Each structure stands twice: as C-alpha cells, then as structure tokens.
Image (tube, rainbow over all chains, first blue to last red; front, top):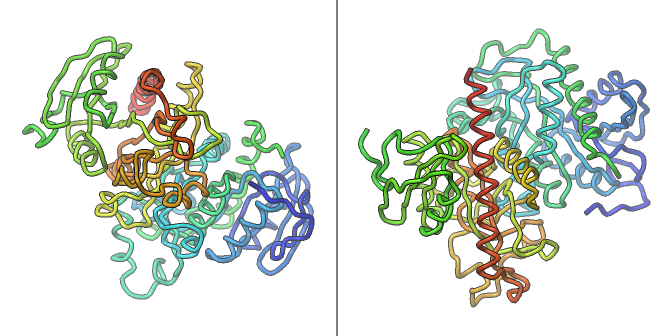
Length: 253
Length: 251
C-alpha cells in the first residue's frame, strides 16, 4: 500500500496532503491548465520537469491533476510517486488514435484493460501479468459520460512505445502493424495506460483510463476540426468521474 | 449446422448464458440449482445440461481441466450461440489476509498458461468482461454472500502450483503473491482472452479450496459444497441480469 513519506517526491515534487485522493493524469503538461480552467477554483501545487500538478475544487469535491509526460518511463515514475503521496484513484486522461472503423474523432474511450506493448513494466513484473482498469473506476467513467451526454466506447486499448511506428504519420506500413490488434477488437492505440494500470494494480491502488480519439487511424477524418472542444470534453469527463468516485465513497484518505 | 466436434451441440441446444465448471460431475451439481434441467449431451469430459431458471434458458457445460480443454469448449459454445460464459470453479488461495474458503469474483488473469500463448501475443491482457464483474458483484450483494475481487494466476501444471505439489510453490508464486494476485487456478486466462477475442462476455467466479501458505487451513469437502452452491446461486442471478441487459439493448 501507499508508503507515505514526508519529503518531496523526487520527480513530481509533491508532499502528502498537497493532492486530492483522486488524481487525473494527462500526458500533456499543457492540459493541466485546461483542467484548472474547468474547476471552480484551482491552484498550482508543483512543477518540475514534465510533471505539473494543480489541485482544486469542483462542486465541493477536491480533485488533482498531474501530467505524466509522454511514454512509459515518466508515467511509471509519476504513478509510483503519486502512490507514495497517498493517491487512491489514478486516472489517465489522454488522447489516442482510434483503431476501429466505426470510431470518430471526438469519441471517448473507457479502457477495461490495456495491451502491454510497452517494455517498461516488464522490469517490475512478467508480461504474463495483466494491465486491467479497476472496475469501480470504469463504472464511474461510464456514469460520467452518461451524465454529460457524451458517446463512449468500452474495451481494450493498446499501449506501446514507438509513436512513429503506429500512427497516421508512421514510417512504412502502419496498417499492417496494427491489423492484429484491429482484428482482436482493440479500440485504440496510445503510449501510457498499460504502464499506469500495472504500476498501480501491483500496489493495490485503483487506476483507470479515459481517452479521447483525437486521430482516428482507420476512420474518417484524420484531422479533427473540433479538437480543442473535444479536449475540453475529455477534461470534463475526467472531473465528472472524480465526482462520481466521491459520491461512491471511494475518495476517502 | 453439424454437431460441434467435441461438445456435440447444435444451435438451440443451449441458453445464451453457459456456466463452465472444470469438474465433469459438477455440471449436474450446478444444473440441480436450475428450476428444471435436462442432460443434452455427454461426450468426453463435456457434459451439457440445459434448463430454465426463473423463466430464462441457461446451460452448464463441464470443460475438463486446463486451458486447452476450456478453449475447445468456448470456441464450440460460441459457434452454437453462447453469449455469456461464466466459469464456476475452484483454486488455491495465495493471500493470507483472505478467509478460506472464500468466494472470488475474478477481474483479470495472469497468463501463465500455454493455450493463450498460442492464441494471442503475450502482451494481450486477460480481462473479465466489465458487465460480468459488475453483475456478479451485484448478485452476491443481493444474496448476502461475501465475495472478494482480484486476479487469478492461470497456469497449466497443477503439480507445480498447488498444495499437493512437491516443489517450493511459495517461491514459484512469489512474484504473483507480492503483486496481490489472489488465487491459483487454470482456466481464467483462457476464458477472458478468448471471450474478448470472440466478442462474448467472459466471467469467472471461484471458491478457494487449498490454502497455499497454510495447507492445514484448506477447505473441507462440506465447506466446498456450500461455497460452490453459493457461487452457482450468484451466477444464476447474474444470468438473469445479463439477459435483462442484452434484451433491453436489443430493443
């Protein structure tokens, strides 16, 4: 369980008590500012390297947001250190490339689990171990989307390391590389979820993933003209999810 | 459609929800919890009973032991119309903080088996269907039966990971015990990964039998009868909830 310490964590630069039990984790440090704008009040708690943290209140519920940076290495560090300052619910709030042809830009994806195509967590535990989202966070994310009237897809996502092998701008035949995952029904490809889910679940901490389809890889419209509005939707889903977890009694210290 | 090669069933023989015990004799034990049930086919280790529970058609098919046999049953059951697969089984408790026997709703599985390795790349996760987990938990709650949630270590060699093993099983299992994996058994990884890939729901509910750290605390046969019966009651109520969910969505 959480090993709370009194010194500032080495990378995220946080002390216990500076963050809420529920922390939303975008990859992009810039998106933390978007979180702050959507809250009733929010204050910057820490900024070091790619880790920016704000804590704030929305409708009376205390919620934090810490950026992870891009890829598994900073995500594993960020999640580990968040657990050490007492985080109870760690929720990735990121963007992804949608893989299924029925998906569109702006769709929300709630992950039930992630393909461990990233190497980083194999240093912690064998590849046999699954990357699974906590079912209570999945439920809270579904309720949040339904309350906000936003369409969502529920299923597996693929986490991997090399963005320029599996994206619309990739080298070579990215469609062939992605085909096995498309055939298995995997919904989207991104770079952080499996790492977060493995690091958190190994320590008994709840984690989940909410993604925005910013670049459908096989669907229509590679460029989303409403990307900024959709990013705001994603942040609103994250905040609403934290509120649902609060109502479920799952954000107590 | 011709009869499926191993389970010897055709469409219409089963309900949309099929319970999957490993133990051949347990198929009848589970069917005895239905309001009515008839043996449809018995072939090899695959015994199938179909009947009604509170007006909904449900089935039970024994799989035999291990991922290889379970995968055959799942592939063939999906071909004849199964939509919801619920394994009702037993396993060896690996955590000392839980009671034994305990009833466990499995949310995911460590893929220590060979069958899913042949089917899927190793990084593909064995995840329980979300609605399956949620409805198993709701049903347990309504019935007042205590359950716990967590992961299963699925593996192939029973005598390399059970209280009856001659090996140092706690050393073998240490990475899983340290990561909080609850129970050792053999089929959850196959049920979850194959069900996901075939776009049907996979769920697993287990009663712990052996206790790996304290073999002397292993469950008695009488305790196991009660635990399996409770797991069956939870699964039957879950079948009703999934039926309501699916047939509401289809309207």
